Length: 616
Image 1 (cartoon, rainbow, N blue to C red):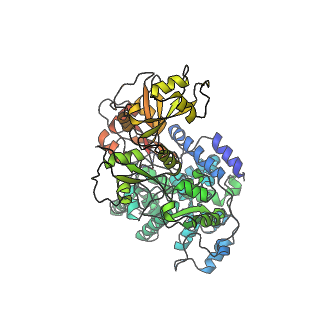
Image 2 (spheres, rainbow, N blue to C red):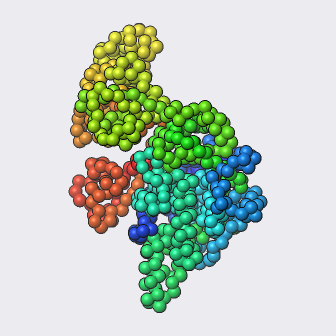
């Protein structure tokens, strides 16, 4: 087997297979009102467009995995703790636990728990051959699975389910925690919003339980167990229903029965994607059983817990949590992908998934911090004419979060009053720092251009060149270099009133070919905000050399990574630009711009969308 660092290097030089159909799979049906996914060809391999779409995401996730610490050998029982919060009566029997822990690696444990029939037919062989020819794809998927597989197996064994289900996230998402489909399915188990809510997965501005590894695993396995019971223990039909919906499968069974045809999975007329879906899982299971002969490059994963679910008890800034756990923030967010923002949800869940060797230090440091010190707050003075939604928008928090924090029962506010605004760690320090010498001051960041001098820059912003030199720790006769960034403290009026309210701003010089949308995307802000800050319309034509104010932190705090994915959407009958924009929370103008659409759209047309999967 390849080492972990070798796998990381392999992932960076390999195109990503999309056998999991992450971006192109259709929406998972709501179990209450099932609907079939749109038909797709049952081709075993990914298209070139799919590989290109997923390459960047795979690089990012493998890079994060490469930084995660190795497994801690110390068992949770040695500390008297329960890693997964499963100490209640539903814990597996002690004998079963001993059986599960006797295996040295997780793959042997999974194989030992196989319980599905593994037929060898044309449809299975087609998928088997594709996987066998793309072992680098399985290597990347297995490396991404490293932190999660032990947890998943614990949950599978508790419910007495076949262990093949531990491989299902490879089919669904290739174990990418931020996977997002054009049907709005999210997470490693690919729940659509309605199905997620039905199985108790909370979804709001702060948090999306569909991406929470712990919560979504429990929900997915509960769903699968429910489906198996619905079809009298026939797991082929249960798996098909997980993909296409129980209603779709039941109708296919009824149709065959009425025509005197067999009603097993292999003889049902189902969507092409579903016809390939079950064979993919069977092919993966067969390959795992034959992994020696097939020369699979699976990640070496010990059969021991990697993660521990730690109760925090209150909302906490994720940057602070990372420091307490002595972890990189990106690593923490990779293990806790359910949190959309810079902090956990103020109303819960109040837990974090942490590497077990980080837990003791984290708990020790957390015990010294009362709940009120676990989130950074800014005191905002309400200006005349400001609305609650504008204030929330400026600080990139929700109106409901501001109202809850300040015990407001309606959105009416008065000029001169103060509001407490929850903001992210370093972002909060920057915002608060702008008001150290007065509530009206704004920190601008000026990018030095050829020919600039301290005197010219100071004159432009209406400040003293002595102060400008002092703020940047420069001599007053310092020679500036193009590309240098200087801090300029000024009041709102000096920048034309376009960057009101405390915060950090910078000046962007428009280059040839740039638009509001491309600039907004570069700075990770909304182009409507960018237009408002500069007093121009969203359809304004920009001129090279034009200068725009860009407010930092207005769209996403610097401590939170962008989670934007490109989605390919096939237009369906009845779709319009408006309904598609509403569905994916983007604007019609953006849809037109991304796809060069001037008139109407038609069924079968392919559209490109840039979707913020953590947009709430």
